[in-house]
Length: 256
Image: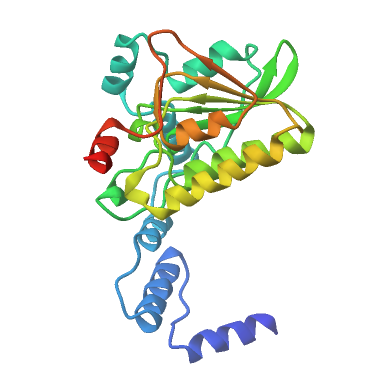
């Protein structure tokens, strides 16, 4: 009976009942034209492309994971090493017990479509988050990746950090942030600033509840400095770490 009702409703809406992914594609495109009367969004276009893809899901997942592990690419990683700095993942490997790290939200990407960002996406969105152990004791961690957007914080980047902080409070474990960021991602505008507001709120909520440790691993400015200032301990690397209230160009602009 349910099948008959469903088929009847589909026919009434003018969508022919056909089998296979072609039917799904046709129905979605038709619905988009009838309701929105505008081109299919990029998100919808990617969903439609994946429906008709002949690539096995496991292969596609492995390919995306490999992209996430490659961070900003070989050239940017080489630049990081030339400066005597490790990558975000290398730092976590050095910090945590061998084999203890469990990553969270590895494939998250930003949602910004302004200023050419729609074609500039990296799985992980410039921060590696998760949990592991140090000397057998559980800790939650996030490590900002300077090779991707200069480690800048956007909406999804902030959500990943907030999720780790929330989980740390739930289980009563310390949270350690490895900061290497230019601050707010200017392309995302107020979404980026709102993201920092959420991080600051959790810094305050965590105060006196769990230990918060900040490691400054490179040149940090703006929100990437304000948040560590709210934590319990700040560690810096000699000749590598720098803290700026904001970038020199901004200071020059507003003071002259």
